[in-house]
Amino acid sequence: MPIGLITLVVLSILIFFGIGQRALKRLYLSDKSALIVIALMFIGTLLPNIPLVGGISINIGGALIPLILCGHILYRVDTNRERLRALVAIVITSAAVYFASRYLPTEVETIVIEPNYLYATVAGVVAYISGRSRRCAFLAGILSIIINDLLYLFEIYRLGLPSSVVIGGAGVFDTTVIAGIFAVMLAEVIGETRERLSGLRDNQIKNAHSASTLAKIKKRMKKDRINE
Amino acid sequence: MNKFFYSFILTLLVLNVNSVICLGHGEDLCFALYDEHSRFLCNLSYNLTIGDQYITARNRCYEVYKIDYIFSKAWAREIYTIPFKIQENLQIPAFVDSEPSDYTVGIYHTHNDESYIEGDGKSSISPSGGIEDIGDILATNLEKNGFTVLYSKKNHLPHDSWSYQRSRRTAMSMIRKSADILIDVHRDGISGKYYTTTIKGKKVAKIRLVLGTQNPNQRANREFINQIKSIMDKKYPGLLKDIYLGKGNFNQDLSSRSVLIEVGTHETNKKYAVRAINLFSNVLTDYLNGGYFEANNGFGSAILYLLAGFIIIMLIYFLFTNNHTNNKGSMVDRTRKRYASAIMKVKKKDKKPNKK
Image (tube, rainbow over all chains, first blue to last red; front, side, top):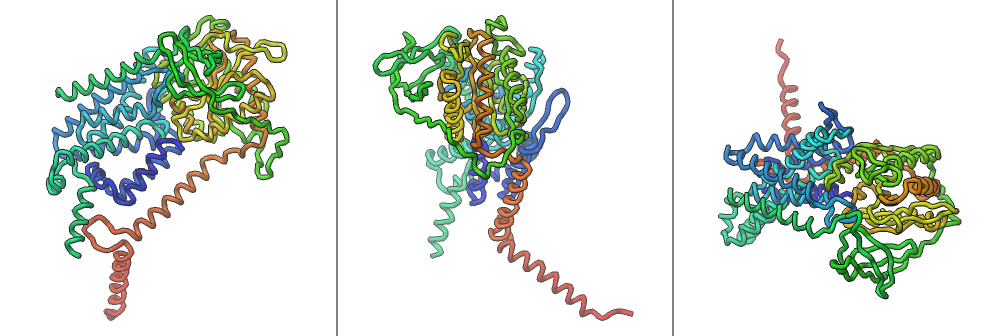
């Protein structure tokens, strides 16, 4: 089973059981809409790519639906400052992924980490460091890979290669999807850990930008104990 | 902004250190591999790490335990011998009801520029190298034997580490067209003398099979490679150089029958590589006709199953879980109340006398 599929199945189960609601909320998604998006991505993966202009085609599950989601998030972002931070994160992450693709080992026998995971991790880590929020991490993770696909067009013209670009062509198995999910998960895990280590009280965590479901569960358990 | 800048530089440094440590696939640079008794096993042109595994043509699996980077030497201990039983009396199971044309083989090249110095003139020719001729021959032979072949000459250059991402999309497009087997055809970069043998009086290039170990489908792919190896050993002993268990997945997670093959090296005479691929196509023909598996039914049924499963799961979720809005009660309760109120309204309408 490809890693992209495993990630999405695990994610679906976590969303189904109500975990990660805080992260979904920051992405302006409810449980239902997140499950619908994931299902559409699965189905879109199996459908043929949509041809665009200039030798570019796009896969519905691997790029079109994530792009629409990114557009939705960018449109709904609260402040212009956060929008600008997201754009900066996208540029920095795209550059990091571009240089990674140029300088990492290329041959079968010299690969140390599977490129699919490595680019997703690079995108996730740099997206979180530069974006510092779930939204920015998600946007930068996905859009950095798509931007690199578009940069490949310039390589095609520069080198005169008889090739074309298929954005997100491997669907849910593509690095695009994995990068976005890794980035959000990193933001969630690191953000939560940082909040806990900094010793914030529960009500502070609740109000904090990166507050997570765990704090909510703890509060609910405390309330249940008091009611008993 | 300083944090962004420093984190960006740090990331680049980490990546560059990794590439510097990696000795590269230098076409003149390789490790000599010895067993624990210092007997020479083979030359390998890759960045060895402790724990790497290597399966010889004689079915012995070795694991690297010591590396000398200065003198490019490594030592490996034998961890097991694989019992390859040739299935001579294989009965084709009754449920494998597939004709040759039902089987689809997908062939592509991640590194399209790979070529043979003796035959093509250079070791690398952009955009299309000599390796595409080898792929062509494999595709033509399989088509002649009645199989459906999807041969893609889509270019995945430049020859960088992103090329596996590009070829992943090509592989995925073949999966959508119900490819049963995926083959990524390459040539190796070590000295040619380790990659030549004689079969039936003629010099032939050896073929290396590569299995990605960072791959959830690893066991299925290993089973596939083991079956191919058993046929190769029976039909053409010596044709298989070895099986390399590489880090990475080489897009082998997309299919349970996916393999990367290295047909000779840049120093091998291209004629020998052509002979090798002709023999390999016979091996594949025997494998596909051998009743090992049933041909892929295609994605149509997969889509239907996915849709059905999705609808069932969403129905269960919507009916029995609490909504996360302010409305209290489950979807069942709210639906019941909604219809109950609609029924009440209808009954009230019935009770109203007709105005004349």
